[in-house]
Amino acid sequence: MSPQPRPPRRTLALPAFLGVVMILTLAAPLRGRASTPNTLSPREVAQGWILLFDGESDFGWTPRGDSRWQVADGCLTPVPGTGGGWLCTRSEFADFELHAEFWVDAEVNSGVFLRCPTSGSIPTTQAYEVNIYDAHEKWPTGSINDVGRCRRTTRTVGRWNTYEIHAEGPDLRVRLNGRTVLEARDTRAARGVIGLQTLTGRGVVKFRNLKLRPLGARSLFNGRDLDGWQVIPGHKSVFSVTREGWLQVKDGNGDLQSTAQFGDFVLQLDVRSNGDHLNSGIFFRAIPGKFWQGYESQIRNQWEGGDRTRPVDYGTGGIYRRQPARRVVSSDREWFTKTVVASGRQLAVWVSGYPVSSWTDDRPPHENPREGYRSAPGAVSIQGHDPTTDLVFRNLRAAEYPASRD
Image 1: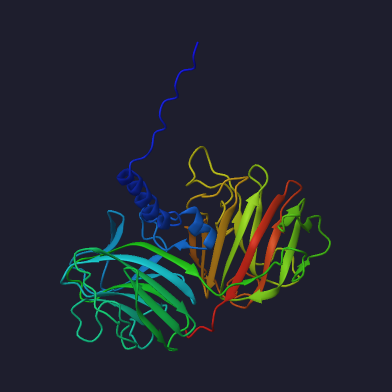
Image 2 (image 1 turned 90 degrees about the horizontal axis):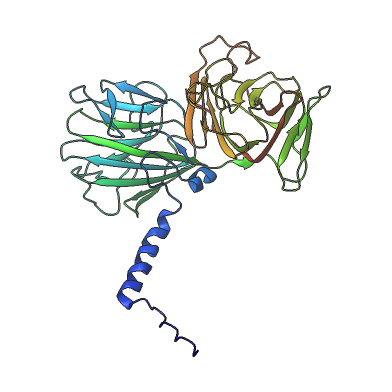
């Protein structure tokens, strides 16, 4: 029998081939960014981004002025007819990148405010207003009021627009819809809350995809040894460095404290629990040399039934003994990123970029955070809880905030 001829090799027609190339090319920049509004991609989580707005609630925000705000269709927007004012984060930030998307009609006068005072009205002499008002004669959209005018005017009315704002020390940069429109230097404010404005309460403004990445953190762990850390003696936990360069804690109880101390700060680290529902925690503003004496951000990936909104023992990201996590985001045997922000009395935690706790310590001052409000700097510490403890940590980094003006 003679061999059957091979079927001809199929080739992709040139127009179809070009179409595939265009699709892949256009899709490539999106791989690192979440496509669903008000979420983070794994890459963004790994880079340290956190959500300021979860798309469902105003958790972590508070109104100021006459305006009242609501969540509608996955957006933060002022309630019509309630007047002018701001919606502000409860937590302060110092150096950061901020991503914000906004939609406005022709009537509204709005803005994104940076490094604002923590209470009262917000004059532009004490904060930075990245303006949203195309018709403004002096400071059109993309300008920072009283600091610098944007290089080019952009029509933003009736469409979704994107701000990417970089604030690092006195250096400020604004990108509008992918183009840099302003670079400036100013020293009026070094830290503060983020604010969304409706100047008069008239018109429509909507915000979504409010994301922030802290900048300026320094590494607390070198991946080779425990230089910069000290073990509180007399306890059972074993702290070591793995072949991968991770910090590991096994057995317990125990306490490993940083020699560096932080008061108002942002802390970020990656964590993995190597067992079922293991118990650990990150202490901060801890009393140096004292065992388990600080504020504690809990680590425990356990919830009741199938409901992650019912954490067991405060849940991962909860402020232990003070406020349970509103949702257990993380799972055992999987890496997750924890972000802790302490600014004055306000303490907040994000797990894999999702806001899980936001608590104000209104207790009277006390040296020990177990007993009352502590503002003084203290150690960061890793807890070994009991004989079942087996966790690893990596990418530990923190940045101390500039002094508060309040």
